[in-house]
Length: 88
Image (cartoon, rainbow, N blue to C red; front, top):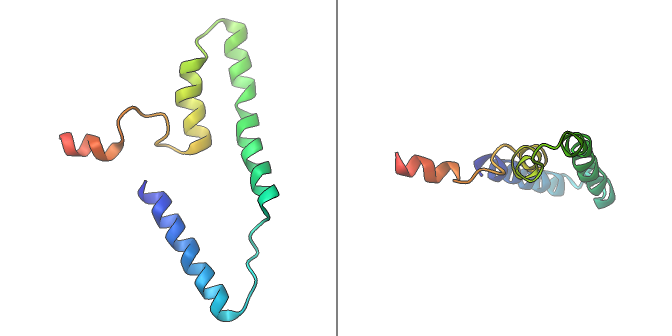
């Protein structure tokens, strides 16, 4: 979760600097970001189809490997990393 917060904070800081300088943000429009999400999801179609054809379990693969690829390294884990540290 911390990398997402740091990334968001950095983005806000850059936005404030751009506003102070009177510069427009070069960020892509929403349609481009949706296209990038489509690319991430599309990359997972081939491995899922290969597993279906091979008769291997697909749902677990989608919940773990695909989720981590699309949503980040902490997606698809049963216990959040912070909760694991608290237990130790």
